[in-house]
Amino acid sequence: MTIERLPYFAEQAVEFLAGTELLVLVGAQAPVSFFAYPDKPSWLTPEGCRIAVLSHPHEDGTAALESLVDALDAQHAITRTSVPAAEDFSPNGTLDAQSIMRSVAKHLPDHAIITEEASLAMAYSGLTESAAPHDLLTLTGGAIGCMMPVSIGAGIACPDRKVVNLQGDGSAMYTLQSLWTQARENIDVVTVIYANRGYRILANELKRVGARTDGAHAASMFDLENPSLDWVALAKGMGVEAVRTESASDFDAAFAHAMKRRGPMLIEAVI
Image (cartoon, rainbow, N blue to C red; front, side, top):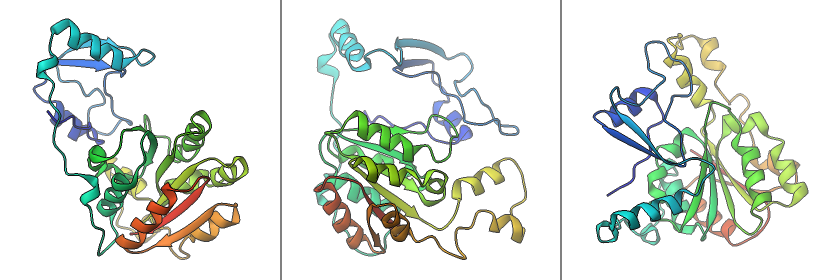
């Protein structure tokens, strides 16, 4: 059995959950969408679906699942899904969101923490199934820019664990000063900037509320060019080591290096 991630957009989540008769919550709440979109649902659980709570967010979900398995005497029913080994990935060619995630899965150390706030990263998060055991912290609401500070919190709370922040360039600009805090406190965070030169999530939201996006002024509001952001210069100006990568092999080498060193580092992935 493959455990799939609930889709980001409300209508996709509704389709994903269609036909579900019982929803068991383990350390989670019933799914709702981030925003109130015109003609789209906010409550995502299908009508008639029964919701059962196995453990609340403040409780030990793993222990609850283990107790359930024991109570049902279902150890024999547990199987592991075979996924391609991350080590088999050979980076070459164009740098894109998929090759970035494959490199992350390949080089991620045991018990790392991934913080994720990049729409391009979300599309390929399933590739980390083959990575070493790790925790994932991602959005629980529409707070753009939140994962830069969240990565700091994770690094301070767990100083012996590597933190990898997968961050869009647009959302990173909301809390850019987080890099200075990482340098000042010497927090072991590696920030990967998905530099697609635009506020992609905001452009998507504009379309989803039915606003026009075809005008020159509307398009320019979500453009991060003219001038383009220089993330290497921005990071170094705040005391964080940084490198720019433009190919899959360059990114793979930079990320592998970043996983073997301590302290803050930024990798700009131009995609």
